Length: 106
Image 1 (cartoon, rainbow, N blue to C red):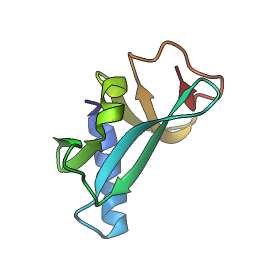
Image 2 (image 1 turned 90 degrees about the horizontal axis):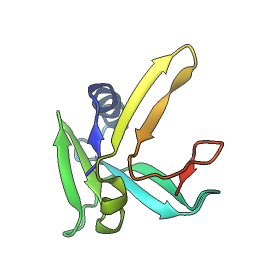
Image 3 (image 1 turned 180 degrees about the vertical axis):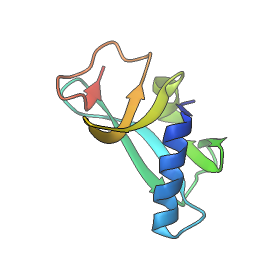
Image 4 (image 1 turned 120 degrees about the vertical axis):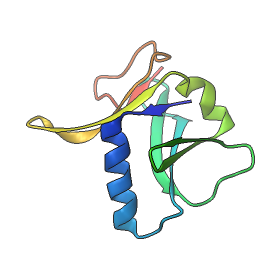
């Protein structure tokens, strides 16, 4: 299962609060595509399937589908806000290579 750093958890909570729907979870998935073979997908979701894996970080619920679970095992989602820009980044030990744009992996 992917883990969230404190910074990522705080930012996700802020974004969920801005949506105004308290039952939202952060869904993290791996989909075929991108120039390296797979890409990450993250979005807020209120629908949790019975076979989804769920974890809680602070008061943020994270949901991963069974097909993405193996590729996200040991991965960490972080958020940074600095002079170089702000955004989320996934550190995934399962990725053997990434593309130049940083949006896909294999």
